[in-house]
Length: 280
Ligand code: PAF
Image (cartoon, protein in one colour):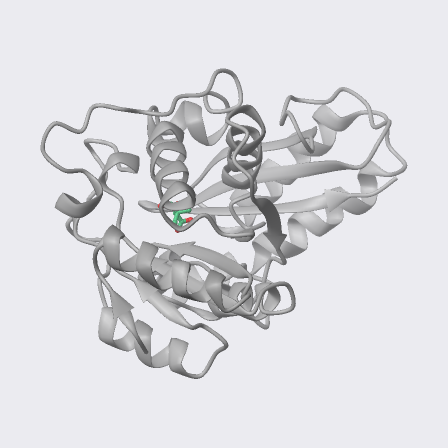
């Protein structure tokens, strides 16, 4: 797998591909690649002839109490996994390459970045918006893909691309699940066997809510029932289970169009995210 580490080298490679008439896809990641990431590479390969996978553990999206240093870094393993995919290039810059001395700009959003995950992790989405804007402007891809597993992140990115008129098509990558329905996540590796078993109930409980939501007018009760079921299944806390508008992510009182249930439940210190479409 070809790796470039500087923005200049990335731009040079992209320019060469453009000269040869290629279309460019970008798959931004923080590494520690699992099946969910690899499926993003697979999905975008139907849209572009060259694919850049960025691997960068972005410090600005971590809060003070979140352990940036403990985030898994396994570049060699990641590259080996990517060798078996349609990826053309890995962009793995250093922190100083991405945030050089005197870097002062932050991309911040109102509203959507302050609710749900944004309320639990203040500043997180500003860090995501900043790094994703930079990655998009550095590589100028035709298409970029972000997993639907981090549904709010995807909505935030769609918003910045709209607001900043960045000329790229954003794709939402299908949420990939393990055999028991648990969404693939780098965090799953931290679960002990007992917690891993409990985690499998997340998908079942949200699916039940989705089914009930199509016939019930009392969404708050369904959310409460799902939270209670998660606690009963063994989750140690539930941050939220909320039925929201699929674009603004604002809480809905009733369903008039396709919506989304978004949820975060904890097993000890591990926060697991999941979400599902509610069709009507
Ligand atoms: O989802 C992630 O891995 C990260 O938040 C992203 C989009 C690569 C930005 O650092």
